[in-house]
Image (cartoon, rainbow, N blue to C red):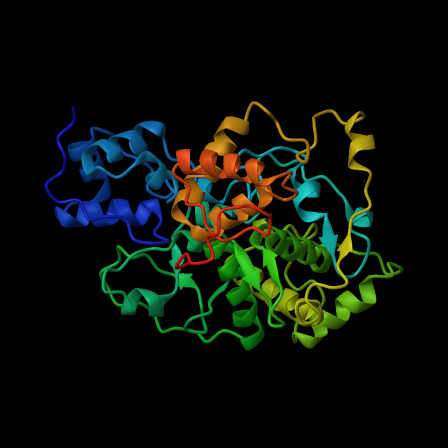
Length: 387
């Protein structure tokens, strides 16, 4: 049995695995590579990829040497967002239309379905984040009592820090030198990113009018709007005038610096910030109206599935289901909002109080807290729960 490390700082809420590795190594005044080799027996882990595709060996060794559960360590990676917020971390050719072309505000999303067959494409994951320098909020890092990198900084669904109203910049918690001067973010961008922050940290979004929507719905709507404002359009396209108008309100030329295809994840960091600013302006009426009316794709997925070369993403690959169930379970143990959503989903149309009781017993056996009362006659009253 592996000996526990004498010093092993615990993971912080919302911390990325790469950040925790850095803090563990820093406790011994070592670099991450040297620490991984000396303490874990692993040669040269790619610190920039552990937040996305960590090796099972790395996670197991960390659990053995620190006493932190494997599930908690996996929750510090992008796997924590699968499948609620991101369908998969394995690129598949039909993920793009399934994720990006379900919702919109300018037209029926089915009219803009186009496959992105590039093997690298995944929603919200860009090469400069997965392989390049980390980004973060400089003001957050400066004010941290224990400086750490947030997991939600590792995806490109935000361009600013809603708490401080500044743009995210190239910054790592491991940097000892002074950080550059913060740059103020546009108010509409910070407001949009504030809602996205709720989605990725709480699993739900409370709109200004009070309506609560699931975090997964929020991200898919946002990514759909991004596709609407980024995709190339012909002059006679009926949706082009309102899209051009939003770019103009943002003070930017139509499709500024997007290139031929306008795939958001392939853009640079500054171009993505511009796109999110345009998306923020485009979504303001929808957000004020409580996500109504929202255009939903009428694309006949089931009919086309029989003709497709590979099964669509909407039809889950059951070989992956055990992994997805494990991810949901892991996240629900740590996040009360996810636990509540999971219980309500399982009891969407409860047949009886006995059915609810059996569901609750199963959740508790998995270590998932049973929270929030359900309006079913005869169910256990949990209204007094502190949450």
